[in-house]
Image 1 (cartoon, helix red, strand yellow):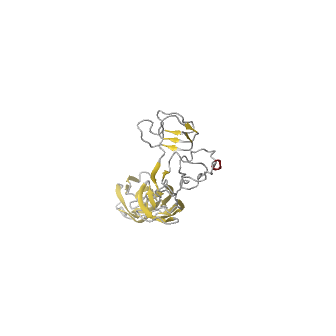
Image 2: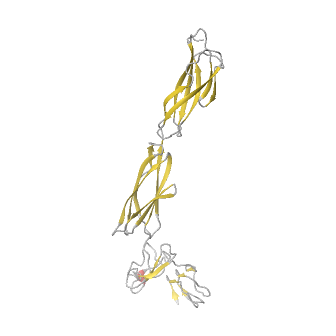
Length: 322
């Protein structure tokens, strides 16, 4: 027996299941099992699974076993194969399809079509948006996809590698496809969004984009006050003062506030001591010849994005009171 460009596999005899005896190989064959036999060449694939579909109607006048997408027989026939060297010329496979497709012969009686994949021809570009609420910002991502074979399509949207939405686009001839849209609230920062399209016949097609939500608006101090605005009498003691701050922020429900500085209109050491984020002690004292001492307390409020704002509150030790 002489063989070339042939699949011999999946037979089930107890001894020599695929080939019994010596054979002559002209190369570029695929043998499932050649145990106990001889004749294979370096150009043959031996002891491998051809990955065939079931015997069925794949077109043409007789049933065939299709080469599945990852079959090792695909594009591994004789690269020097010339259809016209046969009489009659071998221009078609067993189904009547083109004998050499995609540049090189496939091993066996079935010539697989070139790999087919759905096409994503538009996916929303990466977006950068301003934060609008505590929970984030609403953004919409859309994608148009088409399949030239008319297959039904499954579209999955993944956010940070987790599937959050699945859409189904029905089969349609001659082509199928449509638009899939994903809308969600995106948190502050960068969120990766990946779309995966599967036609059930080929490897999934994958593309990614991103949504960046930034907060560039500083918080607002709506009110600020001191538990002790006027200190009297000037008894030369350190008096505790607590600052109360009310704030609002577009994206951060709980911005933080703290005292970042204290100044006095009357110079001198030891006039104040900051005891906490919003507490301090000030010296109940003033210069006799002055108009009263004024402590200016500066409070800074910072949101989670690092935006900040400052506001002052005054505590006075007035003139004329003892």
